[in-house]
Amino acid sequence: MGKQGKEIVKADLKEVIGDLTKAYSDELLAHYQYWLAAKWIKGIDADTLKNVLEKQSMDELGHAEKLGERILQLGGELVMHPSQLLEKCGCGYKQPPSDPTDLKQVIIDVLDAEACAIRFYSKMAEKYRSTDLVTHEIFEDLLKDEVSDEEEWERFLAKL
Ligand SMILES: [Fe+2]
Ligand SMILES: [Fe+2]
Image (cartoon, rainbow, N blue to C red; front, side, top):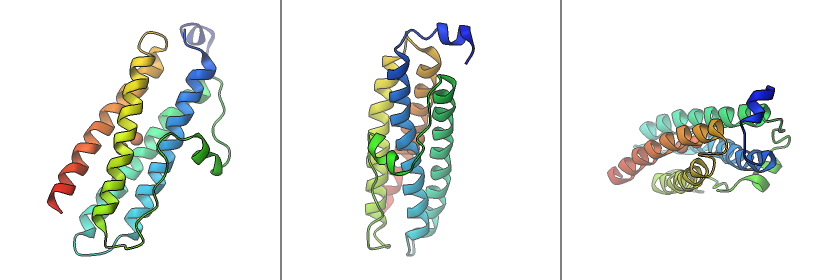
C-alpha cells in the first residue's frame, strides 16, 4: 500500500491484520464447508439446496478474496497452511452430518456460521469506523451479504 494509504490508518496495523485474518480464515472454512455439503447431500429436496450451497460457497470465497487483498495491502501475510485456518478462525468448521439426507442439520450448521459471521463483522465494522475506513467498509459490505445469506437460509429451514 502507498504512503498516504498507510498514513490514514489510525488503528494498530497488527491488530487490523489479525482481525482480517480471523475473518479470512472463517470465510475459507465456510467456503469449503458449503462446497463439501453441496457434494455430500442426497435426497428429494437436495437439488435446490445443492445449488444454493454451491452459490454461497463461491460467495464466501469472494469474501475471503476481499479480506485477503486488504491483508496484503496492509503488509500482512496470508495463512500459508490450511491447518492454520482452524487455529486462526473465530467461528470454526462443521463437517457435514454423517447422514447425507439430513438436510436440516446442514442448514442449521450453515446458519450457525452465518450468525457467527454477522456478530463478528458487525463488531468489526463498528471497531474500525473511525480508525480504518477501508477495512470498515469491507466488513460492512460483508455484513450486508451475511445478513441476506441468513435470511435465505432461514426461509429454507422453514420450508423443510
Ligand atoms: Fe462470507
Ligand atoms: Fe455467508
